[in-house]
Figure (tube, rainbow, N blue to C red):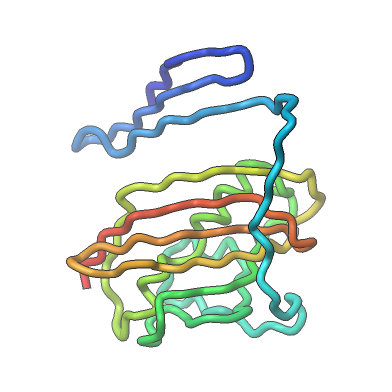
Length: 190
């Protein structure tokens, strides 16, 4: 891994990170860290969708045959389809880390955003490989939390065609506070 400082301003820092493996570059990331600034403007229009609370939701999917990382999370279905059901490419779910010692910090939030399979996999009727090509995240809030708090997530593919899928993911706290908005482009090999 080779981080590089690209730019430092009064309230922001831009950093590039390259992760390489035996075959060369595996991932390139550009990270922007910004401190809050005083502003006369504020707008927020990301209301959490109405859905049952975690205690009333069934499991999203059982993880046999799932990648090893999936076993580190609890998933509950709060609406939409499940992977490999031939359904519409949309999930609504509650999710959290099984390991309560992780808390609710930035790393835990980013891991949750990557925990569910891409929404296009709801359309699948048989296993098929996928691969993330691009992923952009805007993090709004990272509330301090003890244990492993439930987070509500929607994941919807706007387009699945020509071997690719584009999707939007939004994560809210259990109280309905928007925490993250993300976009992902996924290669679909099925």
